[in-house]
Length: 113
Image 1 (cartoon, helix red, strand yellow):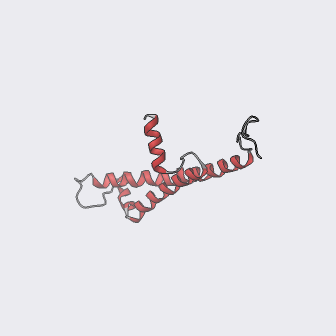
Image 2: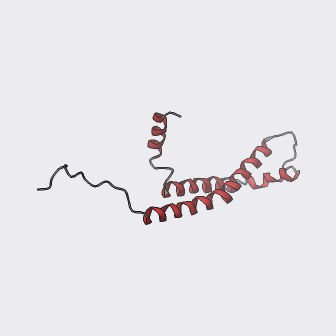
């Protein structure tokens, strides 16, 4: 990825991924993907993991793909979302605890009259 494409990607998002708010947004995106998979009923397709087929025909690969999608979304929801939320809280606490490094105006700069 070039520097120009990175800046285009960040501008299109409108937020920084590596910030407390950005981490919370990623957690919300992962939670939304999992909840949409769960609401769509993909949980029933996870029976292929134990060897039982959820449908009559055994020639289709489609249930295996749906089961894989649900399992990946589930593990991302269970493992990544709590980590992202806690990391966001720690990141915000560190930002508030440490003094900001804003530069003071130069001595030879514009004078106030």
